Image (cartoon, rainbow, N blue to C red):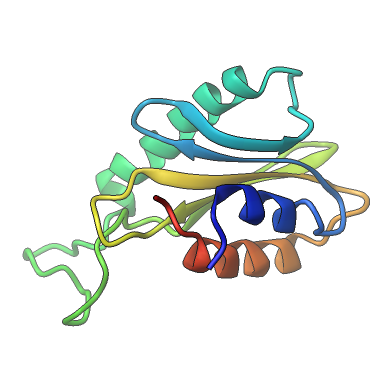
Length: 138
């Protein structure tokens, strides 16, 4: 099971990967970074993407809670935000924010900046999900 640095190195092997980070969405702090940052500053990018992640994770419209009060989750489902990932498309790239579910109250996500011409969004999303499941936060 990879730690943050190993996970980021693996993410950067994806075709078209420009930059990646593991970010705490409650504080906006980058726990680890690799590659480039869209605005040249990994910490500023972490804070900006954390705002997007926090907004998505905390919105009732994206909640798994249907009207009537039941969660819709099966028994034994892991805790975590109701959102799996957020994808933002720009003219030159994609930003994928993948939430990491943990045994504790997780507030961490993986951010991948992917070049639109060289990357494969579907492949990147699948691999990022696999990496998020294996990521060990210590």
